[in-house]
Length: 377
Image 1 (spheres, rainbow, N blue to C red):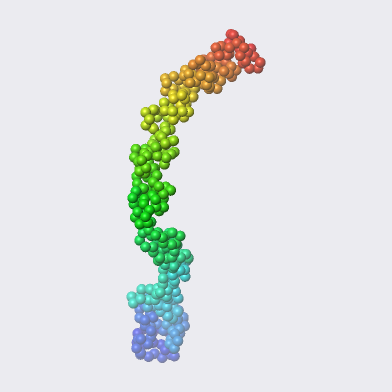
Image 2: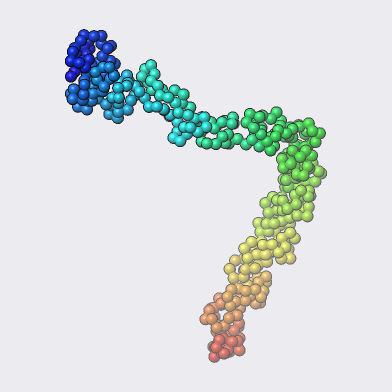
């Protein structure tokens, strides 16, 4: 049975009475109209059901689309209670609730029907504070308690100005400036003499090594470590570069690039003319010998040693191979294989037909020899 007046309600025993609207729980219904009922049959709208109330008649209620209670002053899920929200709430990333400082809260409805989550704690940026702030299950990750001067040995333990954190302990001031005459940590050790400066710069072209200044730039004609020795003359430069195509050896600059037409070690001698280049490559098919460039590839039709003579025409190629079945002799290519059907010395004569090289009596295969007429029999 339905009542349609906001001033009457069914009390469950067949009588109608004029009473105050507040006695009929008007706030439960969206439009303020009271629908009293004793069973679902008393509710006429599709989907309605009768919600019982202790000591009062029931009321007709239509569950919301998802039957989820929200903050709106209405019994959305038709369980007899308005705005009875879930037991807990949490808006942080999945899997973080209950880890570290993160915890779920209690849902509450605000004054303007907004839904609140009272007491909820979500992840924040990780701090060094012995707390898992970002709720990932790890505490104080990303902080190096062994070397961090702000958190040395423990979170919040800061070293004094000028100190460093070593193995979790703050140590005395460290020399920062390592140039000659500097003692900015006040320990009486000046410049590179202070072990704090090991492997640190002591100026342009200078690095502290084993408590002394060491030359590291070896081609600027400057005494960078102030030991009265410049560049390669300083033993610090041993086996270090003294520029392009130059290496410090035996306290002097040595040429290492022997085919670029440059005096790389500045001794007025260029490429193979410099004894540093002895037996060193002077380019493709070229080797330095006796202070001069020598041809070593004798069949590429290239003047590799730049002496205007190519391949076998160059005396450097004497008795050197000029290819398969070919040997340089008397400044010319000579056939040495007389039975392969090839013009190995490129003189347009093949095998025994090359009578100058495949002379009479030269084996030409299968027990045969070259004849004076250029045949093989």
